[in-house]
Image (cartoon, rainbow, N blue to C red):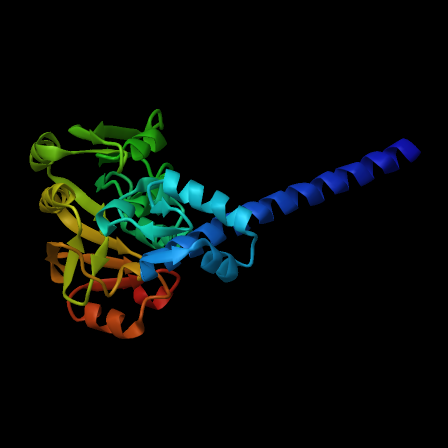
Length: 283
């Protein structure tokens, strides 16, 4: 009995320890996201300022900055840190995978309602499309086309899924395939539904900061009988260097619940808008 009680106590202690580790991991990720957003907003900040902002030690700040610099989000210098150009940090997959995770998952759940068994769907290399991919593995039969390596990994070997990987020049930043070969492959297709995201939009237009990505996304949108744009609130209202296409060109726009209601109202004048978690937004 004593041994059982001791084992039970040990198990409880291990559970508590695991919970603390998970909380610590979430806290670390949240803190690093806060740091990244603060630096991106202010351009250049000092280590002391970040320590005051986050309430952790200077040593912990240095570890956080080292990791963010390793991911390509920020640039270190003696005593501080500065933001890399938007074309670098906004495209970095490691950075994008760690931000607005809950919003992207909510958008993905709403967008999954657009997909029916038997359809052919084209997913781009956005992290929101990656979140959606994980929800579609049971929607079979399904034909999935994508230029994103991680989306390919999601569907590889899935029963009932016909998977077509779109080749091109490999981009380490995006972990996907781009360039002229990818555009030409996409232009040869005709699919039921295209689901994409992009880096910025306002009430009338969508944008992206990279020309090569714009060309691939335009080709994708041109290949679909229907198109859907998946956007979290942090991307709007914003602009980027290159215009992608007007909002009105999309058949559906899916946003998260934190999107400004005034912007949602403007978007609804142009197309079908679904607010993730808002059943009233669904026709």
